[in-house]
Image 1 (cartoon, one colour):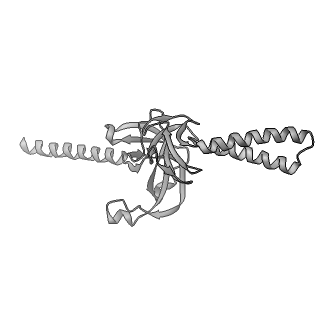
Image 2: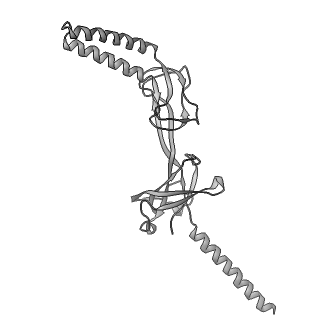
Image 3: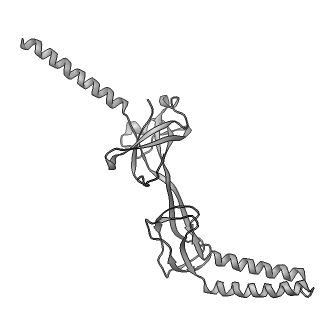
Length: 241
């Protein structure tokens, strides 16, 4: 009797192991790192930082002032240029000022007003302030990076797939993303780009065998209305079977 039970137990164990193997094989996930559109905001004129309009981590709106420069000298010059042009307009209408002088004063007025506008460094899009690099009171030169704003409404990750899987994929195909840090919380996404040039597996892959394989990069995008997904997080992507 015992001899009959042992084979039955072995068959049951083998069946369970086979089921688990099939399940794990069908649930294979490709790991990628979350990225987002990041915009660096820089000073266009020299000046001293007067204030920041947001703190790191704060949400920002399109057109919101992120950093303000103390531009008292530029505002004074802009006021003088505006008054000079007003007088020139009246004289030009009466024929007392040449067209050349009129155009020169108009340019000086417009140029001064533009530089005053540059004193307020604004965000070109809605998003979140990731980094503020300088402090209030610092003197900055043109081109100095002041802050970075990220648009987190949609993020993406690059995954790398073997050649034999490429034919099964197409742009727009739905994928599932899983966030290990949040108990495998699911995120619906789609394939946005499939790159046609083969490359070696990125160097951050651990095993030497995997690094020598030729793979293709696939960009998977994920809507992120709650901003749960943040740049630098690892997301695991399951492709359609």
